[in-house]
Image 1 (tube, rainbow over the protein chains, first blue to last red):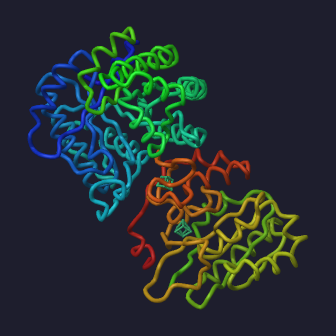
Image 2 (image 1 turned 180 degrees about the vertical axis):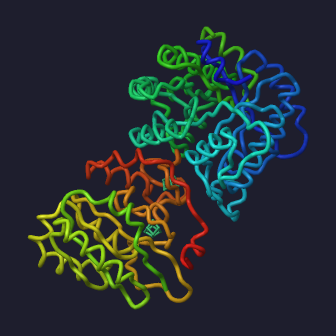
Length: 292
Length: 206
Ligand code: SF4
Ligand code: SF4
């Protein structure tokens, strides 16, 4: 199923992401996804996230699909040139994977192979353009595809709490112009900023899912504040996480915070994207508390 | 060694808005300059009554030298709506930085040729990408100022204005965005999707 169909039906679309393991044993990931994420619309599979080498996104998508879940194939421009990207897109279509999230990708310097060559032959915008072109039956080199062309729901990301939010909006506009169908956002901890962002973003007429992370500890929140672009956990939330260490450790505080963020943002957007970062088991409780 | 080649006529025509002041840089001895085409272009602009003046010089990438020359042509420059620079990417960036509120356009693409590079000041860099983007980036080179050489806008990686790769380096695309905002030219960000062409050697032979 294409995620765009759910948006068209007017559903509040819920997605969550899973990361493939660094190795070939995927049973655990599949088990968790089946147990905790089978009720939601679709599951993102990250592509060597943070430039850390892992099992492939495409192969993992196929396994999840065979288990009855709807995968979203995340594809970055860091590791493949335009030939490899297009080839993987055709492979995805052949395997029946219909949802994409198209990203530029972190620099190789950020991950566990800093010596690797960063590719960036294309970027998020030109990759969306490329998918659109494939959908018209022609590849980026101008050559015709044989047979029926692929069709995808094309997603991209945007960072609503970034300190350069106007530049982010300009980039969002370019993604829309290139053919993007829907957006998932970077994690939001400041609903006011998100709401302000949506006031401007709604002119593009594309569905937006607010990104949510369940904060696990004060340390994690501080780490994000210092290191993760476009993410800022405000002081009162830090205090809240500090107050009752046991409750925070058990994930109760984090789920409360995340549920509150979803509730506040819900009237302004078309869905939520949950980055559970290993806390997939808490997703059902989070959705319950958020009233979804 | 590098080579500057005039952009296609239609491209230059689309850049020209109102009256034009032209700067030609014959460059350091490492640059091969399209002299015949440049003269032709200036004649055409003059015939259309669009030319306010011309400087032909070398080393416009030397800001001190360039400032002196520009000052002596102040009237002609003030009378122009924009400045068209025929030089390598470094030259255009030097001029663009000098004119904070005037449109500065690159009329050339810069390609590498085997051999030595020209003399370039440290602040500006040109990778001779063969498809100069300075006209859609406010005169800041996205190839060298962005760690990923992105040509369609910033990635989501900048934190506090710094690049995700190097916290000592300003995000090139935030600089571009600010410059375009200052010039009142944010509309150029609505340009078509840019896709890089790595087959530039082929183009140089043609
Ligand atoms: S975009 Fe940058 S690298 Fe390319 S020609 Fe212009 S200044 Fe040089
Ligand atoms: S943070 Fe800025 S300079 Fe660094 S790679 Fe991203 S867009 Fe380029």
